[in-house]
Image (cartoon, rainbow, N blue to C red; front, side, top):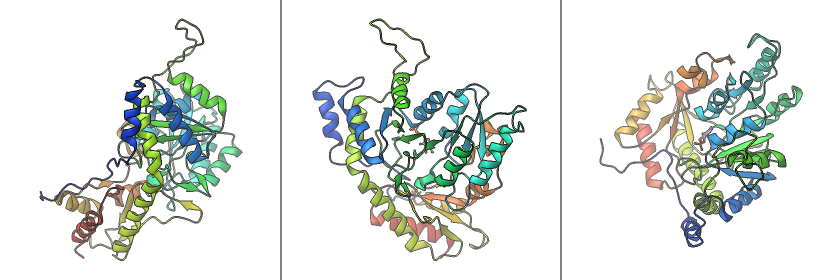
Length: 384
Ligand SMILES: *Cc1c(COP(=O)(O)O)cnc(C)c1O
């Protein structure tokens, strides 16, 4: 192991005002449960994304869970989900006893393939998936690493077959698709403020929608579904999913620097691309026309046929020897032991991306020297 300081994949990056908001929460004793920072953060999220309504929650996973509850997902329902993603996109489907139907990626954005999506919908509706004719209860596309999914095609399909879209924008706050903020495009959108995301509240998430009753219901369900009464009265199963006022204070400070963070992450991408794109067997994911990525993580594909047999795993191990953290792309859900029995539609695009892809350190707090060290490490691994 080298003595060089650790370079992390993506670490928290506080701005000048987060602590002031937290101190204000202490000074006013708004430690718990809800309070003005929660309202403030929700307003900031609405203003930033253009969504009419937002609910600040305890995590992105909680937001997906509530989205599915709000859409009425029942045990045995089929829910379509992008295969190549973090497990949190799919786990809430299982919480509800529903069945995930996984979809391959396409090569232009690495996200849900609209063609495979339509095949899956037709198969579900004709009874080929579960043995009975079922309209899928929801479609969950993901904007991986900040790159928007092909939302026009996906929304078009959703409209044609009348299925609601839950947009997993956990990695894509600050990304836009045809000028519209990721998270604000589907019937419901979810964000994450987990520690490694583009901004963080240490842990947290949000649910976005233009439909008022959905967000009202989310707030109701997230606070244990208490009916209006002086005593504790319940006619629904509730959850404890709200964000605390202290953490929302961190979020308000982070929202002030979000635009900066996007700029810095995009700069990382440009730096890596300028330094590495000329090497045979190394490629980057470009933005199609009308797509704007926050470049949460910069990823490279390593083609061993062109690198003399060097794989992404060799590069990862080589970087680790210099105390640099990098990570393979998300392992597709249809390849995961826990989802091995779930139906899957598509080919081998996601599988291939998983085999060849590597996420490089992408924090907004990396220095030019840090980035240079990563470049030297990658070049060293490739012997160039
Ligand atoms: C981080 C993440 C989530 C979950 O968010 P948490 O706030 O960690 O619960 C969901 N989906 C994707 C794609 C993510 O990257």
